[in-house]
Each structure stands twice: as C-alpha cells, then as structure tokens.
Image (cartoon, rainbow over all chains, first blue to last red; front, side, top):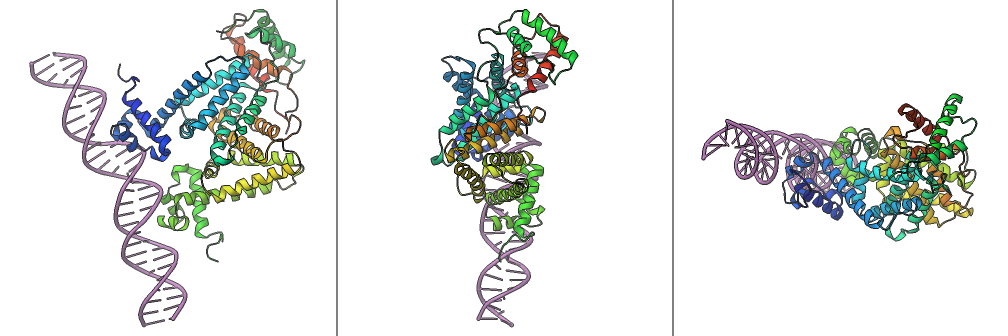
Length: 242
Length: 242
DNA sequence: GTAGGCATGTACCGATGATATCGGCATGTT
DNA sequence: AACATGCCGATATCATCGGTACATGCCTAC
C-alpha cells in the first residue's frame, strides 16, 4: 500500500498543517512554505503530492468535507424522523459548520464552480441525496435541482452574511428565519404522496390523478402514452428502496 | 481642487484600469504592476494614491457601487409604487448586478466585514434606507436590522450559488423563488407565492424521484422517455408570473 | 536666482508560487 | 551479491508579486 491515510502519511500531515495555518492566520498565512515548514517538509513536497497549490486547496476542502460529515453524523445520529425535519437538521449542520469555521468553509465553497473538484462533488452529492429523498416522499414543491440550489443559496448567504456582520449586530434569529424561509420555499405543506407507501406506484397514481386534460408541456399523443405507462406503474406495486 | 474625479484624473484612470483587468482576467490579473501599466503609470503611483492594495480594492469597490447606483437609478426610474414592489425591484437590481459582474460584485462584497470600508458603508446605507421606508409603511414583519440581513443574505447567496452552478444547470427560477421567499420572510403580506401549488408538477417530481433504475413495467426506452416527460411536467409549475 | 517642497521614475527588498537538479534509499532484477 | 531503476527528500533557483527607499526632476516661493 503506497500512500494511504495512515494517520501520519505525508499527505495528511500537510493537509492538517494547512488547515491549521488557514484557520489560525487566514488564507494568506497558508503559503506553501509555511505549510511545508509546519508539516516538517520541504516546499517541493507539496507540489509532488498535490501538483499545485490549487491541488492543496482541493485536498484541504476534501478534508473539510470529511470533518463536516463526521460532525454531521455525530449530530444527526439520533434519527432522521421525517424528511422535512431531516432537511432542517442538515441545513442547520451546514450553517453551523460554516459559522464556526469560516476560512475552511470559504475554501470548501470556493472549490465549486469551474472544473472537477472531487471534494465539492461529494458535498453536492449528499445534498442531492437528501433532496432526492425529499422528492421521493412527495414533499418537494419545486424541481429537485432547483430545490438543491435554494438550499445551497440560503446556506451560503446566511453564512456569508453572518461573517460580514460586525459581531455585535449578529442575530441568531437570522439563522432560524432563513431556515424556515428555505423550508417554506422548498417543501409543500403536505406531502403529495402518502407517506405510508413508497416507490413509484403511489407517485404514479398521484400523477395520473393530477394529470390535467391538457397540460401545456406534453402533446396529446405523449399524454396518452404517459397515461398508459402510469397505469402500468401504478399497478406494478411499489418496490420499496433500501 | 486637489484630486477630483475630472474624468481622467489619475485616480479614475487607475481604478478603471483595475476594474477592466479584474473583469477580464480575474482577481489574479489585477496586479499592481499590471494596473499601473494599463493606466500608463508606474507601480508606486498606486501606493501614493491609494496607500495600499486594499486601498485600491476599496476604491474599486466604491467605483462599483457608483456604477451600481447609476444602473439602479436607470432601472428604478419609472417609479417606486409601493414599498414591497420597491423591495423586489431593489433586490432584483442587486442580484442582476451581481450576476452580470461577478468579480466586481465579489470585491464589493468582500470589503465588508472588519473595518471601515466607506464603499460598503454606502451600500449598506441604501439598503437600510429602503428597509426603513418599508418599516415606516408598516410592512416589516421583523426587526429592521434582521430584515436588512435577510435581504443581504438571500442576495449574496443567490449570486454566489448562481456563479457556482455550471451554467447549463442554472435556472432563472432560482432568482424569482428566492426573491419571493425573501419578501415573504421580511414583509407581512400574504404568502407571496401565489397558491399552494397543485396539479401534476409535484406528483411528477415525486414519481421521477421514486422511479427505480429498472422497473419491470417499462422498457428502457420507455423509461427514458418517461423521465424526460416527467422533467417537463415537473418544471412546468411554480414560477410566479413576472 | 536660489532654496524648498512635491510629484515622478528607478531601483530594490522580502516573500510567494513553482521548478530544475542533485543525492540517497529502497526495491527489483540478473 | 552486484547492479540498475525509480521514487522520495533537499538545495538552489526563477519569475513575479506587494511594498518601499532613494534619487531625479519640476514648479513654486522668497
């Protein structure tokens, strides 16, 4: 086994030193030399291991996601009762993480846009997973993708605003207000699909029932075929997911 | 008159060159030397005029606020009818500015937190002014300060999320949904989202989420086409009219 | 005419991100 | 057992960055 995270692999040492410097002295303090020195290595080691400073930042972000997932698991351990409450808890966890660890959160958020960013991929993955579960239970009032973006936007915004506000004017109510606002924007008052059942069958029944005579989105032929499929799905009996 | 903005004062030349470089090549392209060269001056001139690179950034932010106010005045010229609509328009203007000029917006947002930042002060000033007018008309459902922070958070969040989303997944509905959500959180009007959404859209979303990879009831091709239709149906609802 | 600011221009400093190059050490082969 | 190979660490170095000291010049004041 060549390079594995055996608690003191060079990679891990460097990343942890980088996080330490980042959170103690801001982004400027996380220079390649300082990181290398703090990890007891030479500057080129960083480039050999991470290729680039952006590579280091990505590794730092990934480390942050790992720590976040750990804290989340510890906090959400009791049980995710209903999906909406799970959404609240998840959002709170993210925001709390962003509030308590500003620099790391900033790095994690920055790695997003342009290219790959395996770390941020993982973050979005869990978010979309949560949204998907919400959708499966019939709670979503908007598209899945849009719901995920709403959650992301409110979280990002509240954290950024929190840190941009001069400490003495910070109001914890901001967090709860925006959370509830986000829940209201994403979820419906009641699930569109009965909670008791799961799988495609009940959703298919609900959709078939809700299908108007002429939805603008589909042609007559499409609509007809869709209705037929829905009938098949509705009768096929739900395959409950794991 | 010592140093006034006489359309080609050194200050203005430098700031405009800085903005140009910032928006064309990202923050890294805005080096002191590049700015000085682009403005036809020597590097030390920047430090004489702005004292610091942060000084330059602040001046850039102030320039951005000036341009923003200009565009705002042009856009809000018709008339601010009622305060809530004024809030919508103002928020839209900010978000539109942030969407269309990412780098400049980032610089303007960054200058916030810690110390003075005359530029950002001005920005907060107009925001608080709008909120105050809202409060005076009796529309606020929360504290003025909290309202301002809600507005700020939603705006910041939506802009950040917009730019963090891979272009092809961007959904303009995000802007309107979050705007209405913010209006609902800030004002005591009726639930600004028109109606508890009904019809096929939510059911379609639920079904799409619940659709297994391989339901025995449909063939692969059918399943694929069904997913496409469901996406169309899922997106057909929810966007409030302009 | 001369002396004193004051802005400009040159040269420079330390630090940064990034790389080339060298030496050692383990490994794997013959 | 001797040799070759490839990987890991260390030193030295490069170009550029933000920032500054110093000298030069010009205009003004006496």
